[in-house]
Every structure is written in structure tokens, then in C-alpha cells.
Length: 249
Ligand SMILES: [Zn+2]
Ligand SMILES: [Zn+2]
Image (tube, rainbow, N blue to C red; front, side):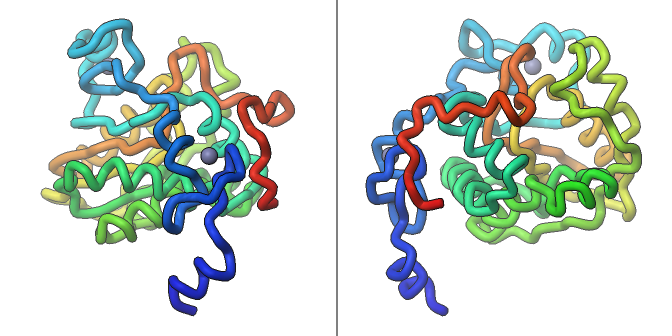
């Protein structure tokens, strides 16, 4: 089925407001412009900061192994509930929209990357959830940018407690040595795709593992950046604030 037919059968409808979406995307131009921007953030890890052009205290004290972070928006409506619909509700169409949004931002700067790698889930979590939300985001990103997607080289070897449920001080320990790389990555430039970045502890751990396997450069691409005290909430606190329910479900 061609793209034209698919668009004709399923016209794009803006998920937050129900207006017609942009071409092939379930978001209208007005809602796109209103997405909560992460405009003022640490130059290295994209943590929201009160002023521009700075590094956060943690990056100054303990520079991360990743080279840069692209996290264009904040973990706030409508992105928070779109991410929760994907992650906890299994709504793959939300993942497609979020991936398209991320790709749209990345296209502006033609990233110098050889491989796109989804942030892996541990096998136990993958069986429980049935899919990896990061793969659902990474697929449209890789397709849009014309980059290969690698879902097998990086694995999560240790199941970890959900970061959002842990006190800040325990999060770094929770993900230390949680990842393994299954082949040499000598000289490769990698982008690791995730849904939301909270403390960057997971991203730090992943980047360390990839660099140890020989990666020349590691970027982290996430749809949203949460402040240190705000991560994805557990389902049940899920509110559709700001959402007029697009009615496509
Ligand atoms: Zn809209
Ligand atoms: Zn930082």
C-alpha cells in the first residue's frame, strides 16, 4: 500500500486537539509550535537550567562519556501522556508520532552518525511489556534520517528497578554496569535513542559501555528531558491534562 493510499484512508488527526494533522503526522502545526521546549539547558546533558550557555554542576564535576544530548522538549503535556500511552498503554502509534517529531528536529543539523541504537530493555522487562518503546521511537528516526538501526549490539544485562521509583542518590548505582556490548564498535559514531531522559545516569552508563567497546562518538537522542525531580510517573497518575482527546482511539 502506497503512502498516498495510507494517508487517504487514515487522515492525520492531531492527538492533542483533534484538528487535521501535518502531512503524515498526528499533530497540527499549532500544537507543534506549543510543544514545551527545552530551550535553556546544560550544553552537555540537556538538563534544564535557569540560564543559557552553561554546563550543569554534575557535568562539570564528572563529565559524562556521551558527547552530546539532543532532547528538544520537556517532559510535560502533551509529550508526557504520549510517552505514557506508548510505554504503559502499548500505543505504538504514539511512538511513531514521537519518533517523527524527534527526527524532524534532528534533520535540521544532519547528524554525523553511523548507527542508531535503541536504549535496550532487559529481556525480563521486554517479555513483560511485549515491546521496547525505544525501538518504536528509533525506527521512524532511523528511517527519516536514512541511517541503519542496530537492535542487537547493545544489550541490558542486568534488570534494573524503574529509575522513576528510586531516590536520586540511588539511580546512578542502579544502572552502573547494566549494559554490555556484543561486538567491537571501533571508530563508529552511535546515537542511542530513548523516550525520556531524567537524571542521565542511564545515558552515562550506556555511553561508558559503548566507548569501552571502541565507539568514537556517542550521542543521546531523547524526545523529552525531565528535571531531576520529575520523571515518568507510574500509570494511574496518568492525566490527560491539556488534551481534548483527538478521538482517534
Ligand atoms: Zn493540535
Ligand atoms: Zn549537564
